[in-house]
Structure formats: structure tokens, C-alpha cells
Amino acid sequence: MKPIQTLFILAFSLVCFTASAQYGGGYNNGYGGYGNGYGNGYGRGGGMGMDRSMMGGQQQGTPSKPKETPPEETAAMVVEQMKPQVNLDELQAIAISNVLAESIREQGILLKNESSSQDQKIEQIKALRESTDKKINAFLNPDQIDKYKTFMDTLKEVKKTKKKKGKDKDSKDNKEVKENTDTKISE
Image (cartoon, rainbow, N blue to C red):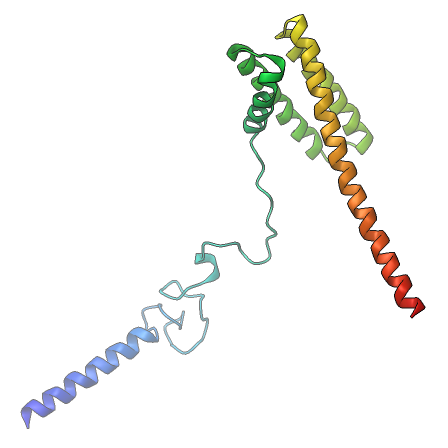
């Protein structure tokens, strides 16, 4: 009789301990959040319950922003493209990379300035571009200056064609939508 009674007490205490661990049991963990079990404040407790703030992913309600590329990386990419076309040596590449990085940093500040109007920003960026070109030209010999101008012109052309392709694609999409609506209306 005694072994059966001991077995019952052991099984009962094991079940009670498991239920206590699962539902909080006054230790502010699990579902309860306040130690009284069953759903009152699920996920708000400081214990074992998972809560959105503990998850590693993006928080709900905060829009994702594209990561900004550091100015140094952008400048390095431009200089890498420029090196073979302008015949830059390593010292010139480092100096021009520093000038470009500073220019990109200043351009970012100008663009984020909310007190300036759009026209003022355009004028400030043009002035910054001219200043940057003068600083870069100071590091180049006369032959390289011509190659640099050619490089910058081709860079501008590439940007213009990308913008035109984007606009052409939008206008084609708009024409298709108009044609689709016209055909639906005529039907």
C-alpha cells in the first residue's frame, strides 16, 4: 500500500509542477505575465513568453528604409570605373576618392535640408559639383583632364538614358492601360 501511495504523490506533484511551469505559477513567466495564468497579458510578461520586441525581424508599423550606401563606397566605385579611362595612378585615385566622398556627404546633407526649396537645392548642388570638379582637376594633368571630362559626359549620358528608359516604360504602360480601357468600353 505504501509504494502505491508514494507513486500517487509523486505523480500528483509532477503534474502540479508541470502545470505551474506552463501557466506561470506566480513567477511572472509563460502565458500569464502577471503570475495568474490563462491569457491575462499574453506576451507582455518579462518571462519566457515570446513577444514581438524579442523577435529579430522588422517591427510591425515601421516602414523599411533602404540602406544607404556609405559615401566612401560610392566614391570608391566611381574611382574604380574612372581609373582605367582616365589613367589614374594610386595616389590620384586615393585623393580623388576622398574628394568624391566628401562631395557625396555634402550632397546628402543638402538634399536632406528641409528649409531649402527645390530650386535652392539644385543651385547648391550645381555649385558643389563645380567645386568638386575643380578639386579633382587639381590632381590631374592636362591629358587626364580631357579624359575626365569625357568620362563625366559618358556618365551623364548613361544616367539620362536610364531615366528615359524608365519614362518610356511608364508611358508604354499608360498607353496599354488606355488601350485596354478603350477596348472594354467599346465592348
